[in-house]
Amino acid sequence: MTEAPAGVQTIFARARTRPMSSLVTVIRQGLLYAILVVSALFMIVPFLWMLSTSLKADQYVLTMPPQFFPKPLTLRSYAKLAELFPIVRMFFNSLLVATLTTLGQLLTCSMAAYAFARMKFKGREVLFLVYLATLMIPFQVTITPLFILMRCLGWINTYQGLILPGVFSAFGTFLLRQSFATIPRELEEAAFMDGASHFTVYWRIILPLAKPALATLGVFSFMGSWNSFLWPLFVVRDVQLMTLPVGLATLHGQWLTEWNLVMAGTVITVLPMVAVYLLAQQYFVQGVLLSGIKG
Image 1 (cartoon, rainbow, N blue to C red):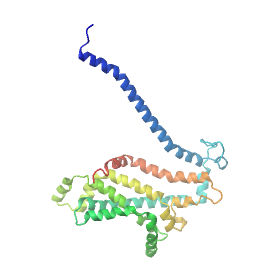
Image 2: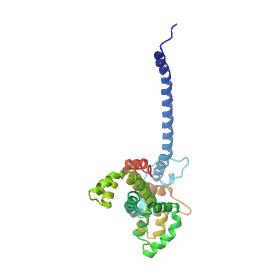
Image 3: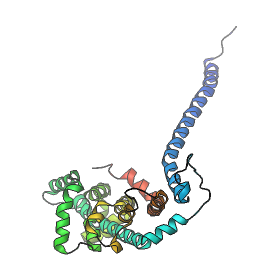
Image 4: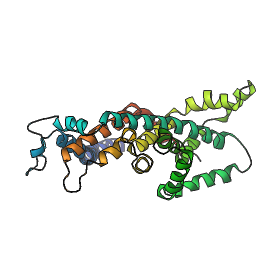
């Protein structure tokens, strides 16, 4: 019996191995999707349980077995929370502080990052390393001298004391500096030849090209300021100036905690962060992928 030509044998060999390789690919993809689904459930279920608990009546919060779907469904926890606390005022305070802190941090960090990334001056690298070294100092170490400074300025129990200490960030400067360093220098050289100043280059060329990094820093800054608890606890005494994390911390009683009220307050606290992330999601992902590649 004559043997088939080499080309025909190769075709038959590929035909025999193709189903096996396709099966392996399907199995791999199936395992990957299964892992992603399980991971997503670990992340989503606590949030769903938080929402479920906030919609339960008092007598059904700690029932056994626990009810995932509240019966009956009630908004009494949110109404009671509004009766006990000036929740609208606290929400406004958190929103105001987080927004102004984020805008201030974007401004100061972008200007410092432009100087470190695009301007040449003596001692630039050493100064940048010293600036980064401040990231190694915990905030708990600096909170006492910062509080003394706020007291000397008369900014205790004021919006200035809540906002201004948070508008400077070594991490934000580092993040934007890494992004600015990737922008081609030919763009600013052409602008300088046309008579542009450093501020014009910074405002009209660098910032528009660094939107992903700015969005990333904006999300980080907003979330950090919105969730801040220790500094507002130190600097604010007036209930009318309290932010949500500080105000809601008082819901934990010494002997009894109404968990449906705590979860209702947590839902109110979480929703703005989710909204901010969804609005900036596209730029946020781009900023994470592109920032820090070049140093």
